[in-house]
Image (cartoon, rainbow, N blue to C red):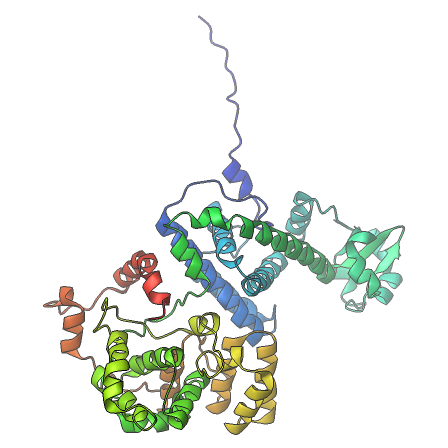
Length: 503
């Protein structure tokens, strides 16, 4: 019997086709199944990346050498594609993580606005990193039929291109790519008279074609988020995802300040002095209100009380501190013990469900439980009227130029960066060299600066730690950082409700 050789028909792999390009508009959602832990880790990593994009975009000139170096370092650290030759696995992570954060950030207008801005900045960085051929391939693949003009045509139109494109000079014209685009796709540029028009086409330099592509991406993403918001009820019916998605936009991804490493190292007599030197503006405001009114409402007590717990105040010190202040007002000692002492013990995990509450992160302060009339909690950069914030900064002797810098950041809704600028101005340093995300981080970094680079001396309360972590008794070996990170990731979803709730 004779067998005829037949070529095996190759069935295209949708996954391979999807990740064949180094960049995409995220038009096709992922269809594969992934584990909950992978879902969570992808979301957290992309959130870290977008936070970095936000911080670098304000701290550095976009596309400068420093900006690009720091962006590339973050891509490497978080295992996202930063080179055009990066493989499908990194592109898969990029694709899936984008859609996960869509679910988390489509819920409110503020969240959508923030997400769109960071994704657009990220897209711009990656698009500019493509080669000319890859850019053309990307445009054509996404039905943007824009082509670069030939060298010959460029030379023929040289004078007109130079006169119409103010960003191009005679020196740079030779190396500049010009795209021939239907004029109706570049109406903003035509309206601003920034491009040369001929026969119904606009001749657009490379820097401006990026603007058109970004506008297209922004429009698509905005529409996609609106559609995603409609599908949220179905997603929220999954009890595994609901806690994660509800709180992912508030997530704090830094150090855990619930573990008191310097218990008792802060005396009650030091608090007034520390408030003026090392407290962030939100805590300084709460401390001043407490001293003036001898009372704080529940939101203020939670925010300030957990902060004090995080910087090292013990339960006994906290009870003494709040009792001394409250009885100076309209609350006698007996009423304090009955109405307020329980709440303080609850804060330290000694009452109720005995949850060890974590000091509030900047994102929690900014996005949850906004202050009402008579309240002093919240973020002054987010919740204060700009004129009142200006007066407060002037009262704390921030220079006029510094006040203007802070107000500009507030105007752009960069509240954490405004707080970081406040740190730099009040500590007389040029660059704080850290990304601020927690009031307790502010305090620690302030103590380092004031102590000449040395952090405040810390001393672990051995007896307390052995009570809190009985499973670690008898073990003298230092914990493996990778094990800690793994445990933290596995427990994050389980603890989200406790992490974000107000007692």
